[in-house]
Length: 367
Image (cartoon, rainbow, N blue to C red; front, side, top):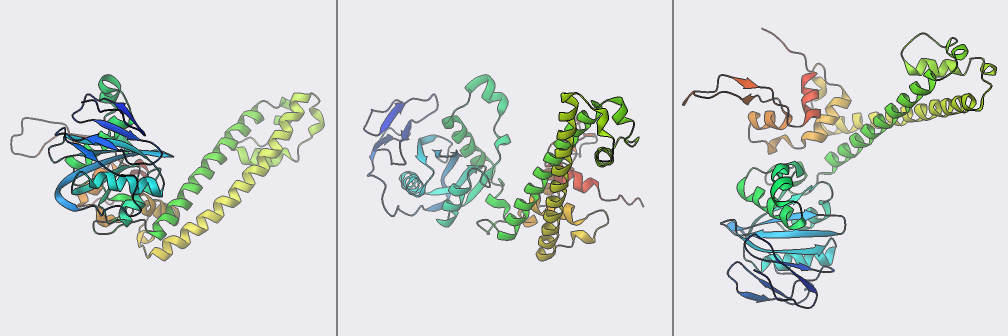
């Protein structure tokens, strides 16, 4: 139902049960209506918000974070929308959100979309307040329903996030931690940062190699004849420095030679940076005490990728849950078996493909 316009808030309506009152500049909405239509009055942002009560029968909160703002939706035990509001991503905004959520009663868990990324600050604040925070991946929202029926908005996204944590108690704990642990783990974060930096370097280096290949192919035939007869880019780039450049007389050709010389230096620099990051990853893997490198087919770089992508393996309830996570668990594709197990399956193309690729690099032992 629509709400009355008040100072500091804007009136909006939604087709879902309940209403939405959006707060500006991190302040708490002055008036809001719950699902029962009862008006609640709340003061401005308190210095110390009331502590949220945790309960297995409490409300569920979904948070759609952005760079400067976040939108939170509160659902009751039956899935009804109690309220939706927007706050600033700051200390005052987080305290205002905590006070606003506490006004609806006990809280069971929070769901934050991208808790390890754009929702990191909000997740850390809630964990520091003793809350159960779950990381809801963006791909868990139904894109088909979003595009064909309801569209996309912060209200819709925050509601979907709340429904995810309400419907599935096994939504991963934030920061890839096991149940009972909270907050980011320092060593894992260092692994993730170095691993992501190395992947970015590899992409940049491959981009330069592709550009160098195109430039080499466009050189005059007299120059290309002096280069090695190979499809590899690096040997041809290195041999270009020893080639007779006097054969190139046009401006475009001379510019191509300058660009290729610059590419050769940039690629060498990226090679050096990649070696430094690989050394750091190997040191972090050794510091973690992991035995992955003892397996045939797993080098330090692959072990670091597995540790960074998987996080704490105790967060998986079973081997089957881990297989679904990395996409190695087959998907049933048969029917009419009754109580028996499915007899036909198909390839699972979902899951974390990087972990699946590392798993595929292990040698298979046939007995």
